[in-house]
Length: 322
Image 1 (tube, rainbow, N blue to C red):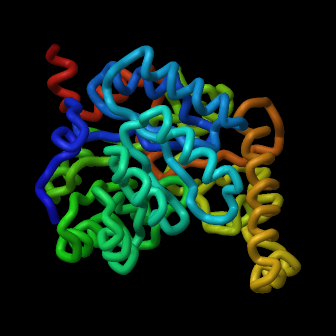
Image 2 (cartoon, rainbow, N blue to C red):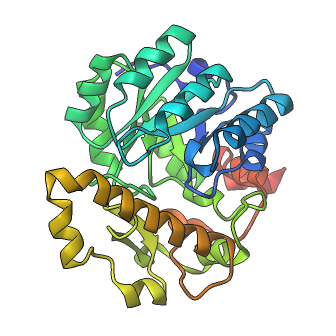
């Protein structure tokens, strides 16, 4: 594993990525991240049109010359992927984070334009595959991550990947406090990708109900569901989630195994899941389906992004003394 840190790779003060979160990450959050010495990344799918995506990139660039990234879903469920890639390259984003598919095309295109590519991986086989494709770093998505999490705990996954690749390893999942951040950095990672704790930020565009849920619920309330995208995703176990269940129904499971129908079924499930997430994220509704990771255990209030960053990178005693 390379010993290069994110601070060197991206020229930032602290080796932290504010992780891209579907429906949550916005320009205000990314700008606040850049203002406080870390980098931020948002999903291209958070914008319904390519013009809106371009406008978001331009807005952040007008605010700061610090590096930020865009997350691309690179599997067939993202029908906008090609146009998103083209727009981001033309607007000169600093890096991509690729998820849920082969990043080969993103890496090849980015190399021509000096854009870095970090790839989500959940095991050694995936890590070695994307390293061979030429990515700049891997993001080790462990079982403590929010959203589409991995299935290996961070304390096991990081050493496995560190021995298996020669490129930097960025940890994703299980970090919400200075102690957890420090522990990960002491394992030799290049940096940490941190998402869930920023949902309960003042800059986040989601409803206060969603933010407050991250305060009120804990790690024991996080469960996996396949109803949103067909791929296991972590959500808060609200009464509504308990009511509708977390598994695909019989018809969905059968059709999802059909090779000819699989692509279209996955797209349908994904669209339906996106619609339910969007309604829950931005309005008051009993249909509360909120994505989050187990680090909500350490979320105790709704704070500005800057305060969250400061508490991540400084011991609490130091903050009190100052």
